Length: 243
Image (cartoon, rainbow, N blue to C red; front, side, top):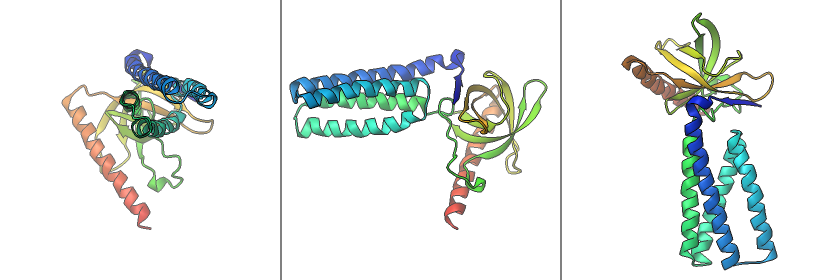
């Protein structure tokens, strides 16, 4: 799987994500150390502590290389933190331990919020084999100054960014113009490719798009697109479950 992200424009944003993750890891491991030496020191609990050190090494790698497995590990981590918070209050009656777990919970939530964007993790509904119900829209993409036109699909739209799926191999930093292939939406949108993924051979590239709002009309067009996107998504869900 190929992944590339524009380091020039989003290095600071991704560094912020990693800082919150490292803070979370430090607080969680500190809580485990306190729990180990204050409440239940044993060979089994020591092995458990070593396990968490190894676990967080892999957890950080999932984030660093933007693998989707990060989200699976996140849900496991949150479940464990909730359990540990309950144990620290009910079993150990240790408020200091509870606050360490609580702060680690807040830090990982902030990290996951900032990284939950089409720039880093575009959501592509591969599980929906019937294209009629996929949460995406057909689009025409004009590339560069020569305005070469390419068929594509808009697969994600969140936080002033989008995910675009097409088979053409484009460079990060390419300026593009997007027009939806739909009579109900005839606005033109302008964007720039800031990230790039390819999961497997035979599947299209998925690009993270940052929309450019150089004029007031550009932002108005994006707001219209968001409304249109939500209406289409709800319509497809309703049609799917009404069968």
